[in-house]
Length: 455
Ligand code: PHE
Image (tube, rainbow, N blue to C red; front, side, top):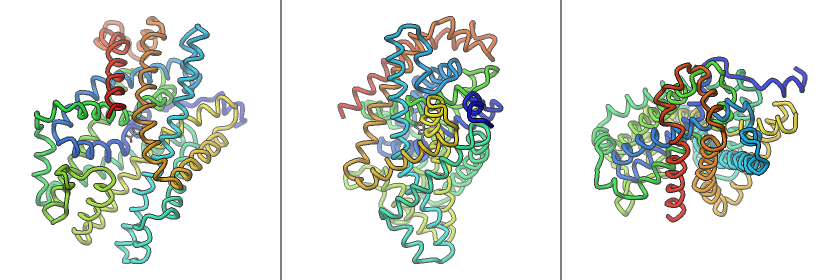
């Protein structure tokens, strides 16, 4: 295909199923399988689960709709989408700046996400080496080093770019429809296995029975909001760009609801896996509490407590470990392709180069950023995470709600929603969502932002 044609040809998901798997592939990631269970563990279990479920639908779903609608309406990348919603020169500048901010944020998120993904991916060959009795190889793979992390981060970035370079249908959609069903099967198999082990029921109780005394803590509320936002890939233009590939014949509010439901469902399943697994580990003599009596969370939980559990289960444990880290790698990969798609569509549409060249150019820049972070880990790693997820994502989220609710004209909004949804005008969605996205969403997000930055 000539370069010009490639640029004009924006690509479109071939079916609603294709879009749903790609969008849930983006949403379901380390945020669900790592973030949600560990946040639940550090906020006392069931109370966090309850707040999260409420917020996912009260806050994240409406914000997701804002991105999908803007994306499908403008059929553009993140930078040129927002200026198209207005005729005011001033607002066009604000829109472009917001878009650029989104592109930079998505790229920075990918630069640290690829590092975390590489820590998980390396556990797959490590488990294979364990099963195959290759002690020295297993030791090398298990021992964190700059060389190991750079190599695996490079490998993960290559996989991500390899998929994105193939385009919307032949790359993103094809791989999401292959990987997502595999992910669901793997997680169901693991939940089924762990729940039969001694100790699991104690974890299940902690996970499912809310302790309402904990509901008052402000950090619980804001953590749940941040988690919902990150989990649905909001604020950085991922869902906007994926929305720009949705057919005009699809019912957007319904499709968006499926994405939110599946994302939340898989986070819930991951909790059913990890919290009971911690208590199985405790039964086997592995420490699961920190010295201050809180449950171990974060990297220590995923990279130490759970591997100790797998080790203690002998040969079967090595297989469980293999499947667990394969699951995490798949989840990370389908999310990272959606992050890379944000800067790639911008570069290919702005500079009129082919998708192939745009992908490898952007992926190389982002990989260099990952290397920079790896080489200056203590100074950069947590800083970049905090900058992007605590500050940039909520701010961008507010801007996207404002553009969907205040800048995009109400009639255009209705006509966009009505495509593929004939009864839109009299629907409950249309009665509630427009004012919701104007007032409640921005207010809630600002509240979260202020709380998060104060803590
Ligand atoms: N939603 C992904 C996760 O849960 C992360 C993500 C954030 C993906 C922003 C794309 C954009 O891991």
